[in-house]
Length: 114
Length: 110
Image (cartoon, rainbow over all chains, first blue to last red; front, top):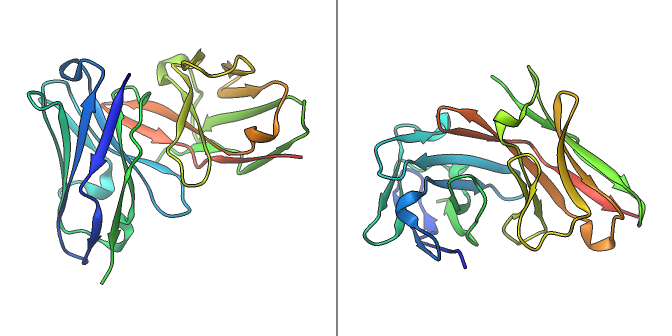
């Protein structure tokens, strides 16, 4: 059974940083692209970033380019999202999702507020 | 900037059939966009109903089906039930690693 468990969310001040983690199991993690998708309170879903199996390619939505960095550790079956220069607009539940957006974690809430 | 379009809201009677659509602000949708469909209830993570245009995820009833209708992707619910009342989202693969979601459709069953 595919399992994706996000962690690392919380309350952070504008301009601050946060690192999200996703522990994956139940599938060959090294063979999958991986994504982060977010959902602001009361809003729709927004794809944020993804990373190729070996980490050699990374793509981002324009609104996070230069501030967020996606990475993966295949030895630890883990996906990460380093978020810097956070803004109020980044407040959302962040979901870890497999490559074709088929399997989803339960999400972790990030709140950016003073 | 291309936008993925969905009906903001839709209503269906219990037992009825409804087709939700997902299009592009410019251009036509094809299977190359690999459309997926999700169902989401408040406070829950999205549940994948359909991936790659028309493949049902494990455990999804066969009253949910995906297709390309004209120039849009479509999700058809046949024999709607009360617990189908949810938000439904579609997503397209736009190429170069980028995915784009529609704004979602709020489905009411009454």
